[in-house]
Image 1 (tube, rainbow over the protein chains, first blue to last red):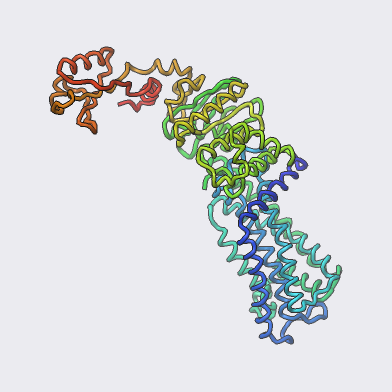
Image 2: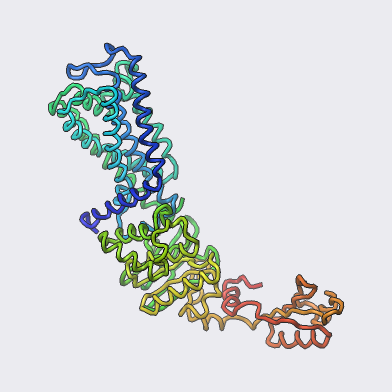
Length: 273
Length: 299
């Protein structure tokens, strides 16, 4: 059972989740409509913010809508990845399908990644729509030259998120609960990382902590790239900062998840909800 | 498939204690046992869902599993799509998976509902779909966990017929059940579990031989138009200690004693007492009697 054998199975998960999504068409459309409502709300909020109060990124002052649009894109990605990873096995437990999956020659990691993959592919689509609506309605002025560096930065951020997601998945596997706590946690971290407000308006001690906060590091660099057109040069420092954090996160995540997985298998409670 | 000296413990409770078992190709082995005997734990170990503390589990060939519950499918998508998904997890390419899924749906008689969402299928269809999923890999060993416990007699018979055909084609089948009545005429061999230990292994006939003498239920009425017999009169006729229960139509059920002459004596006494015997039937199957005696649940 090697990686080459496992790869084609991922498309089976994507096909399954796409088919299931098609049965919830109204829900999918409502989700897209929600994005448009969110954009409208942001734009009205943006009118209250004095442009001179907004931070400058690599020499360019942002508007509130530009600032918060990038923040929300990152926040949505973080929330989705953590949520999907942590609940992938839990959802199978609740639907009663986990044991049927486990008796197939499929690695648990493949099940987890496969169950997350459809949303991972679907979310960039939603993010693009989100940004497109903002750009068309409110004239978003992002630099096209920053898109590639921003994408690379996001990809470099994924291993860190993956490790945290595995730890969250282990907690859900062990305690059968915790998905709701992830949403709350991401919202709190988002506020503290400058998703909605510039870091300057946060208390000094919190702004200080953000020097070690991976989400804040990535967010500032994304804004530098997309608003300030800082280019590839702006990536070096955040990449070096992210690397050890990502390594620690992935190693810890794998260890903790495996520990609780083996425990559940030994107790015979893995398939039970 | 063979299993040797399997020990499984959950905390202080020993779920399986040194269980040995072997199934030959083409054999249907029924795994019987009361609730909590360890049947499901045993089958979960064979599937790799639970790890035993010690022991050897060896199977030669592909293992198919039919779980007991009916929540093992994605209810929003069709039977066909479910099977395609599971076939692909077994390593089949999309085209091959689709073809195989159609074949097994046909084999279990579900071809005409292939595109129906699983959530709209009946309980019996779910079970057949479970068997179809196990068939995807043409299993050499089939593990069936309580497949008929909540099916109507016709649905249960269809599943048994399906499994019998597989066994006839050489598949080794382990069939766990609490429906002891279905073992006779279906299983080739029986293993009886009690509190995690094997207390009997042999053929259904050998198990039935462990049953004590039969017990019969005799239904008694008076002649048409006559007065219903009183409980005291029936009791007097058959003698004290013989259980008697009123029926819904002013008659009585008399349970004949278990000694070898119990039935004859009871019938003779009732006839001599002027009672009219309408029916006489075996109270339980021999297998069921043996099950109760061996598990210590007999009255």
